[in-house]
Length: 159
Image: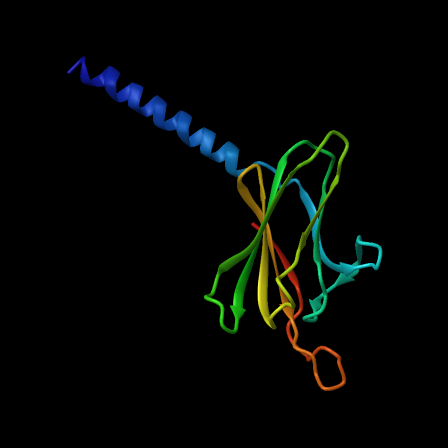
């Protein structure tokens, strides 16, 4: 019996240490303060925040504002969520960037071959390999007057 008691205590300590580590990792603060989408401002940079896009809005920018400057690797994944002719959750663009000292904003952009196909898309942002947030948005088809049709707006969700 004396052999089993130390073994039980060792297993208990390992489980407790692993649980504490998992809790510490999940409680880590999200370094992202906000995320927004933008059209090109005409100078090859992101313009003002928008909630939807048209087929000719190329590129689409995803702007990630950090809560404070930090060095980390950010990865942007762009998925076609509900787009005619495309399998749901198909990854269409991937990009990554490692911030440098003093940087507090990360700019990602996505562009199709040709024009965007109308539908629902999703940006997913990972920080050092862990999902930090996602943002859904719509590419609206053009009406007869050239204005995008009505539909859903972009929404940012933190995980």
